[in-house]
Structure formats: structure tokens, C-alpha cells
Image 1 (spheres, rainbow, N blue to C red):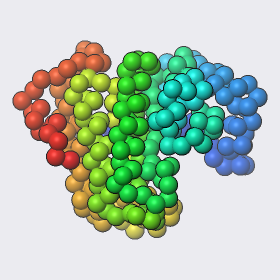
Image 2: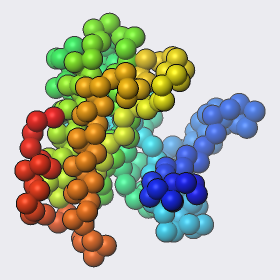
Image 3: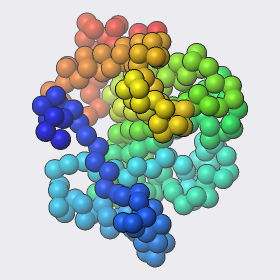
Image 4: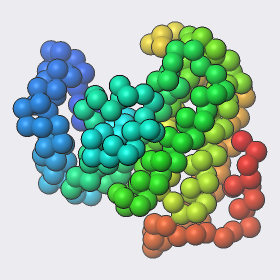
Length: 252
């Protein structure tokens, strides 16, 4: 945390524990089932805010639409995902939650992936950006995305198409002062570490030059955009600047 402060890096601190010795995921499921899923989120969000009102809280959802918005089921990858207990709209309307979170993987559609699945990403992102703006009134972070090298149909060009599509959508929303906040791909490793955890999602920049270039360009654009902001700037402003062509030119 000290180094993060030194280099002006923002951290997401996950207030959960995966390991069975400390309760792990089964314990969270028990607590959630005992009081209702949504009620557990409400209790935890308010509790965290009561201890630390100065930091933002999010709940780390994958973004699947649930019973509160059956008209949105068509955006889910399949009917299975409307039955797993999460509800994007209802869960994010809870007091204490500051911004929305969404994940996105082509593998949700099928193990064999292709360019045809990119359309799902476009509609998935736009649906959540629209709902974050018009219903929730908060930014939305696309907190996980990636493409496994182990899946049938994988190639580096398809992964670059996925990244380009996501970055273009984020920048388009940013340009309009919309809810599309930022995105975090899954996951960046150093050279020599890419054999673990073995899910095929690891990106080592030195081994993926085309993808690294996309990430670098997108990051540069966001840095420049942020440099135009001030602490007095209201969310939703529309910025005009000489660097706009560089920031938003659709060459990703």
C-alpha cells in the first residue's frame, strides 16, 4: 500500500477470504442464504461505510440480470445465468454501494469461441452502461475480461479484437461523459510466472506485443483524459480539447 501511494496507484481491496480454514466461500453462501442475498449485501455495505465513509465500495458482481429486470434476460449469456442468485440492478441499488461492477468472458457463451461472439460483448457492455446511467446513476467498472489460450478457436488476433472492442466502448462512453468508467483485464503477469495459475488467461506483455500495444495506447488516452480533469469537475461533464482526436480516434 505504501508503494501504491508512492506511485499513485489505486488499489481494490477484496474483503473476503477464499480458504476453507477461515470459512471461505461456503461460509459467505451460508450467511447470504440465511438473510436473503440482497439483505446480506445491504448489511455489509452499510457496515463497511460506517467504518470508512471516505472510500468507495463495490460488490464485485459479474453483472448478470436477475428477477428484478426480466426484460433484461436477453442480454445474459444464457438462461442459466438468470438463476444463479445475482441481480445486477437490484443488488446495485443498495445504500452504501458506490459504483457498479461487471465481468465479461466469451467462454460464457461456449467453449469454442469466434469473432461472432464479439457482438455479445458489445451488447453486454452497452446494456450495463445504459443501466448505470439511467437507472443506477453511478459509474460502471468492467472489472474482469480476457480470453483463454486453452479454448478451441483461440488466436491472438481474436484476443486483440476483444480488447479493441472493449476499449473502444469505454472511450466512447468517456467521451460523452457517460457511465462507462474503466476496465481491468484478467490478468497481467511477469515473464516466468505465466505457467501459474494455468487458466490460459495470463498476459505477459513481452510475449504479447500486439495486445501490449493496445493496452499501452488505451492507458495513454485515459491518462491524458484524466489530466484534463480537476477535483471540481462534476461527473458527466463533456470535455473539449485539442488532444481529442488522439484520445478518441477509433484505431484500436
